[in-house]
Structures are given as structure tokens and as C-alpha cells.
Image 1 (spheres, helix red, strand yellow):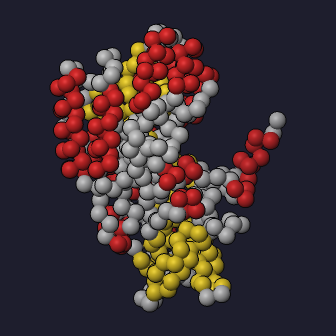
Image 2: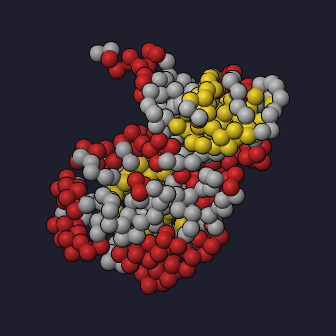
Image 3: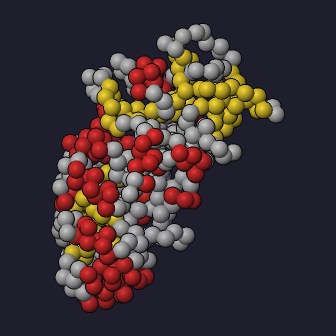
Length: 418
């Protein structure tokens, strides 16, 4: 195999005993490939973020809910969030116990709430109307409340989940109404939580938001936990030397706020975080094959089988993913082209990488899309009736195993067979 452009995966020893060409031949493309060592390492980094005995990390299953990856996260001792009954079902199947699952609901029915309550899972509520709905159906129970601290952060406006322009959370100025509803239904507020957004690379806004949620928490005497939310960013622009989030400084600042709050609160309650993509993003790569190289009105297009049905982030968020190139055999042309790497979907916006300077790519090359472990496969679709790709895990011993098979044409017809 010829390595045309592989700086990141070489440094990470991502593929270990396998090669991308071998994996592509064995499992086909497009293909999601995960590295177990990297996933475990990120779990451990988050667990060690804050030196506080009641500190807990909640994995965000919405980032990647593959059953095998959930099992690994469970083995590493993390707890988990759920956003739907489907995620709860997968998390229980992966071995998470009910006390380690937090159902963070958003505009859901009483039936969805009951799905969690019947399984002994704590429900987080994020509006007055939903709180009243919960209270009418489950009076005398425990509940968690999601507040909007007024501070938001994230890499794109679509993923900022706090502040004045988002649907999430209860505004702090509604505290009196919250307490009225809680009293009316004899509810016990067992936790408060927040989430300011996804992919922050500086900790300032996040730490500031914890001041707000801890101030809100002081309104409730019955708390079992405060959840700071997330979500921690990763350096997607590795070739440009983008720095990692400073975990040491972030942990130090969070510890100061925690210590100050616990001293005033009088009890050592649990403190949670939701690092989101940080845990899963870098453990995942997509492999695809180049099927076409063409010039079109002055632009050079590299046509691959990785459409936005496989990876939606670039078309949805203008997200950047580094690209690496592998070749079964042949020499490398060190001259670089400015290219657009595109997929096979019938949409003009089906662009993986726009105007990238890369070594010359030829037909049948294997390209790797980096940092695709979070919000990759879980956002994939059957658009254009394309088949969802397989998922493969590289174990610590270097072996590879299939952890989700590729869709078949029969899968596309399955729900029509009434």
C-alpha cells in the first residue's frame, strides 16, 4: 500500500495491523472505522478532568450510539444521556443501569416520559408546560430540570443550545412558576442541568455558565446532582496546528466553582458533565473510494462514494474534516491540486471538502475522512435509497471486527412488508 497523504493516522497508529486498503477490500466502502484505544483514552481523560469524589461523566449517546461503542463506554465507568426511548433501549442493552441514565427530554409526549419513568430512569424537563405535563402524570416523583443559563457557545448557530436564541431550557426568571408547579404536583427536584452548545475550544464561556447553573441550583434544597452539560470540542483542523482544549485549566477552574458551591450548599452532591463529541469524534474515520476525477469549468472534482447520506456534518454545518489519501500501489506525485471532494448524492451541496490543497488524487484511491466518530453514522440516512455503511472496530490487539453490517437492498423494503 502507498501512503499518499497520511500524517494524522500515522501519528495516532490508527489502523494498527490493518491498512485502509485492506479494510476497504474486506468490508467495502464507504466504511466507518473506529479505534477502541482512542475511545477508551478519551473516556479516561474526561473521568480525570476534575478532582472531586462525586464527579461523573455522562456520555452523549446521540453522538454515536453503536451498541459495541456503548458497551466500551460502559466498561470505562461513564454514565450516559438519552434523548429518546430508542437511545434508552440501546443503553440498557449495552449494560447501563437505570441509575446511570439521564433522559434529557425536549418537547416529548407523556408516553415518552413514561417509557423512562417505568424503567426507573430520571427525566430532565426543559419547559413549564412539560413540567406540568410530567407532574400531572407522575405526581409525587423525582424530576430534573434543564435551565437556560443565558450563555451559549458552539461552532455553528445550529448547535448553540443556550442563550436568547434557542429552544432549550427554562429561563431562570421563571423560577417562581417552576416552584409553583413543583409544589402543585408534589414533585422533588433531584437535579438541575444545562447545555450551552457543542464544540467549544476555549473554556471561558463554559466555566462562566457553571456559575449560572450553580446559582440556580441554590434555589433547591433537595438536589442529588448538578449537571454542567457540555460539549467539549476537538481540533478538527489538525493540519493547521489547531490546539486542543486545555483540559488541565478547564478542570482547575471547574474545581474552584465546585468547591465554592459545595461549601455553601452544605452537602457533597454529584457533579456531572456532558463532554459530547469529545469522547467519540477522534476514534472514528470514514473510508471511501474515488470513482471519478473530472474538470468542470475550472474546478477539479474528486468524486467519491461518501455522500452526505454517509456524513452530514459538512453540508449541514459547513464543518471541516481533514482528508487523508491511500493507494493500493503506485507512486506519489508530490505536486498539489486544489480540489473539491464530493459524494455521489444528487445535490449540488454534496461536498465533503471544498477547495482543499492535497497531493494528486487518482481513481481507485482510498480517502479517509478524519474525526467522524461523533455525529457521523448516527446522522446518516438512506437518502437516494443509498445503503447505510458498515461499521468496524479496531481492537487494542490490532484485529478488526464488524460491529454493524452494511444495509442490504432488502433492508430498504423491510418496513413496506405489512
